[in-house]
Structure formats: structure tokens, C-alpha cells
Image 1 (cartoon, rainbow over the protein chains, first blue to last red):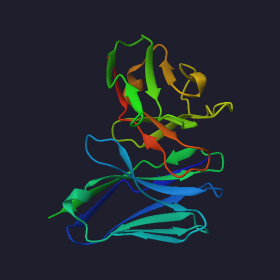
Image 2 (image 1 turned 60 degrees about the vertical axis):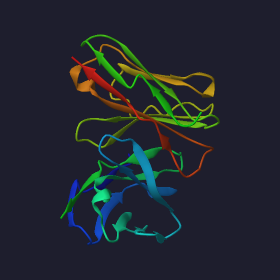
Image 3 (image 1 turned 180 degrees about the vertical axis):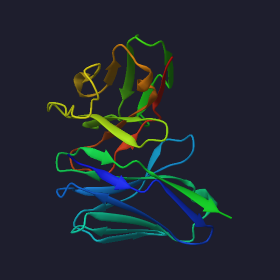
Image 4 (image 1 turned 60 degrees about the horizontal axis):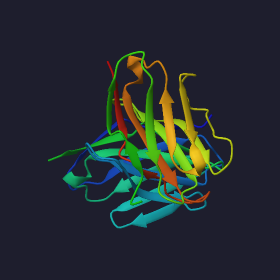
Length: 110
Length: 114
């Protein structure tokens, strides 16, 4: 079945770039997502990329997609304390089912 | 409505009791998803409804879990004979027409089985 894998923790110094990686198995994915969950809050869509794209940039966020390797990454430039959260990678298959990874907890060091 | 609404927000139940969790999706959204988030775990897919199609139940962990969606709108997730391992946050999401980009999440129901 479909599976999405991502590392569980990442620590980054304030002001540096954060790179969160994700791999998925469904080669028929249509969209790939990054959701953000702040402590005590719900899930918010951060950004997404269509499967026929290889890069998307939105202010401090850059999403890279390597469809051949089924690898997705999220780069956050100039990481701030407000970026501290859990980041979930997700993929949407052709059947519209959305499968999430376990989430990467981003910790910001002063 | 303004967003996906879930009720109750918190539920404490005794082991062995049945519980019903409710999700009101955004009006007009055809797709509805249920996920479970256990402490320190990711989002575990449970079930997916799309319009009038048969639901994808492949993520339901046991036959104690069931869900229905009435009139293509409100959905109820039922857990029979609850166990302590069922304690988790149950999240519902809805999405517009097939192939649309975003799934919008509710705030979840925190279920505690004692």
C-alpha cells in the first residue's frame, strides 16, 4: 500500500535554513503536500506541489520534488522561532486518498 | 459553514463503551477523510468518502471501527467496545471536488478511554 516516510526530528539554529525530507511510494501521486501543526493547534496547509512540477517557491519556502526517486523536500529559509512545529508530508493518489507521514518535529536552537 | 466542525472536542469514556464522533464538513465538499493521531504518532488514515462512491475503509484498524456519511454531508465515526489503545485525537478533513488541492482539517476530537 501507499507509504510516506520522514525523519522524526530536526534541530536548526535560528537564522539558518531548515530542510525537511520525505519519501513516498505511490508513483501515481497527483499532489504532494506539506502541512504544519503548531503545539495545541490543528493542521494547516503550508504548501503543495503538483506532481508534474519539480520546484515551487513561496517566500521563505521552497519545495523540491524528485519524482523519479519519489523524494520531496521542504526548505525553510531564515528559520525563525515561530517555525517551531511538526511538519507533515502527505501525498494524494489518483483515488484522492491522502496519506500522511509521521511528521518531523522542527526544533529551533537560539 | 466557516470550516470543518467536529464534536465533541473532548470525550472521556470507560473501556468497553461505544462512542460516536461527529464531523460536519465544509458545505459542498464531496470528499471527507478520517484520521487518527496518537501521542507522538503521525496521522493514521482511517477511512475516506468521495461523493456517492463506496468508501475506502482500508485504514480502519479493526471491525470495532465503522463510519457512515449521511446525505453526502455529516459523517459519524463509531468505535464499539472501546479499548485503551483507542485513545487518540480523531481528525476529520474535507476537500472540494475530486483532484482539488487542499484538504481542510477540523480541530479534532480527543478521545480518552479509561
